[in-house]
Length: 116
Image (cartoon, rainbow, N blue to C red; front, side, top):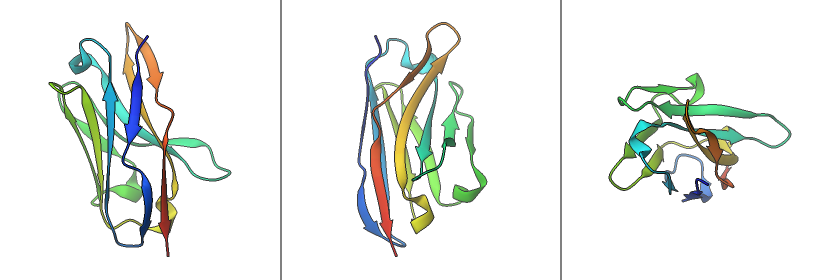
């Protein structure tokens, strides 16, 4: 079973930065599409950013220009650099892995709170 562990969340003020990390136990990590989702209070979990095995990344419009997703295949780690944070970014952030053969795996989430 794939283990997925997020870290890096916390409480920051508007305009500050955080970097989330997601460490994975999966073999052949480089073959997975990996991404970050978030669930704001009383809302559904939604995709924030995703990066494919070939390095192609996509972002939800609300974070474009502020968040950067990256991966280090040698370390089996996914990152999300979040700059210029806003109160609307407050949510639990989840790491997700997906492949056609292995299916999807999720971490337990890390809380990000942005105060105004």
